[in-house]
Each structure stands twice: as structure tokens, then as C-alpha cells.
Image (tube, rainbow, N blue to C red; front, side, top):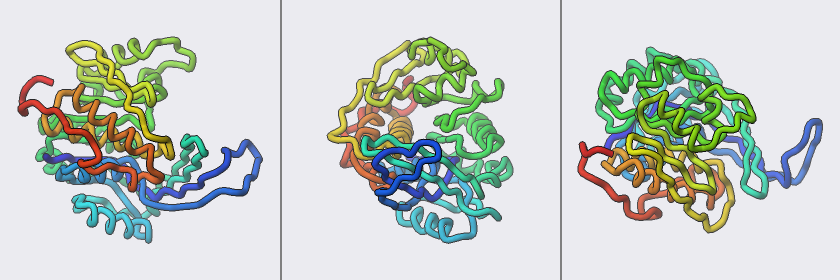
Length: 309
């Protein structure tokens, strides 16, 4: 199975803290760690660990973090031949993790701001050859939109992980086959104000009206809600043995969902497979260590490629 990923790479600088500091507050007692991150890279590695042949498009700087990224992708079997080496530093994300596992993240994009439509067009053959194209939104909007356009033009199934969420141009919605917002991102995509009062069912129905495709609303410990041409379906939550770090759960979910779809699973079965991947990820500290291999997950139910999902 082949998966093309257009998204971000960055170094994650993590501080595990007794509690998140308030405005003007300085706290001691934290534990520091650093490692690779960025949604695109995480999702590419996650899919490769599950057995996919993965090509990645992102951008890094000419620095130690960029060099480390190239070594990581080589070790994980991710094709980085089209990764852009920019003039700015590699993206850095600063992550605060509380004892509960909840996290707060801020990002300095750096070289990612140099990822543009030209780079995406140079990646078009990899998109065309893929069973699924995964796009996330930590990269400049023109690159996001061009990736979806190329995916649609080349007949590749498109999966948009809309994080961080922002409004999308009206003409791009029809190019999204599957969109996977969480409960915070869905209202932003719809342009709704805080306190909008819509139920999860209403949110996914409105998003499906926009795309004409499928919507999977991820709801953490409540599982997920799927809306497609067959109607609404609840995806049951998978209980985690313990919650250590939620940072990589969304990327593990997206990678497994893409893999399930690439292998011919229905949307519902792919989402259930993805839920197990997300539940596994929260039990392990750090994003890359938490991304599961195939033997860590239950068997995926598939149907012959080409059957309706």
C-alpha cells in the first residue's frame, strides 16, 4: 500500500511540568526532553510502521534538527527525496505536558513557511501513485490547497487532518474525500463562534454538506463520530491502559486511518483500527516511541479494493 503525506516536520522541545504556569508565573521541577515531531512526519512514520510505502513532502532547515530528521526518515523507511531544504531554521514546537497527560503546544514554523505550490507540484507523481494522500495544516495554506487539488486531479483519495484548524476556501471543500477534525477544530472549520450550541451530530452533518465526502469527528475518550453517504455511525472509544502523554494520539489515529483506507477497509472499520492506534499512543511518553507497529493493533477488517466504503 502506498501513502503520500504532505505536512510538517519539526523538533519537539518538551517540558513535563507539575502544572502549567499561569501568566507571569515561573515554575521549577520540570523534566526536559527533545525529539522529532510535526504532524506530517509523525503521520508518515506512523503509516510506515504499519507497513505502508510512504513518501513525504515537508521542509526542514540546514541545521542539526534537519539532519536528524533525514536520519530518522531513513531509519523508519520513509522516502524523503522530495523534502525541501529551506533557508530558515527547522520548525520547533514547544510542548508543556501536565501529569494528567494533557498538553499545550506553541510552534515557530521556520523552514515550513517555504513549502509552496511549486514543491507540491514536484511531488505530484508520488501523490498520483499513492492509494491515499494525507494532508495536515501546519504548513502554509497554498501548499495545503495545492496538495488537495493535485490529489483530486490525479484521482487519489484525499484525507485532510485539519490541524491546526482554520477556515478553508469554498472551492477546496469538494476536493476532500475524508476530513478528521476534533471537537475543537470542527466549529472553526465551519466559522462558528464559541458557544455555538450545535451537537456533534449537527457539526458532522454540516461538514459533510460542505465536502460531499466523509467526516470523522474525533472525540477523545468518547470515541469518534462518522458521517458518510450511509448516515451517522458511532465509533466506540478504546480504553487506554493508562494515559501518559496525549501528544501523538491524533497522528497515530490519522496514520492508522490512512493505512486502513489504503488496504480497502470501510471507513468505519478503518476508524476503529485508528482508535486502537490512538489508544495505544497515549500510554507511552513521546510521539515517535508511541506510534504503534502492526503487531500492537488488532487485525484490520478489509473489503476488496474498489468496493463502496
